[in-house]
Image 1: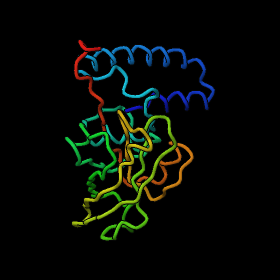
Image 2: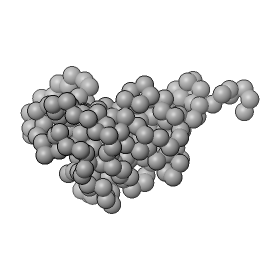
Image 3: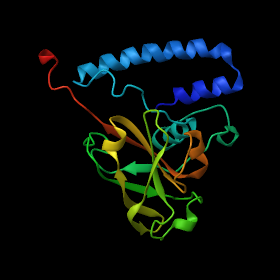
Length: 209
């Protein structure tokens, strides 16, 4: 989920130098493991020269949405936001997405979350899909063709692959703004997320390399 970059950033910002050595050590060994497993799946050992960054709130939300999490602390005492899920419908739930410019399809269910109330049954004006890809600044594109059914909706958004070389992992969120100078800045504008998009550049055969 590309969150260790955010952890490292927060450690540096808070002056927690003692934890940096262990964190960077784990990054190296996890990279080695990932490269080995990817090669077994006929994938390039690394999907990008610089891997996609993210924010801790997205990982926390993803775990709440997709897994049963037990924790000795009260959830409302953890200073991280929990967002409703942003489902990617293109490909196989966001995997095996073709490496081309295209429109991706998304779905949301706002349920009991109230942050998106003013947009329910609207035409999507003022809503954006914001992408994290590699170390680039967040990329925002407007929501298109939104269709509501109560508090659920399906819609589309452009996936500007060629201009931004969006190979590997891209992380999407539904936001109310479209001009960000950093990944952490996105959090305060998120209505739903994260949506995970995986574009693969597979190796046909290692024997021919």
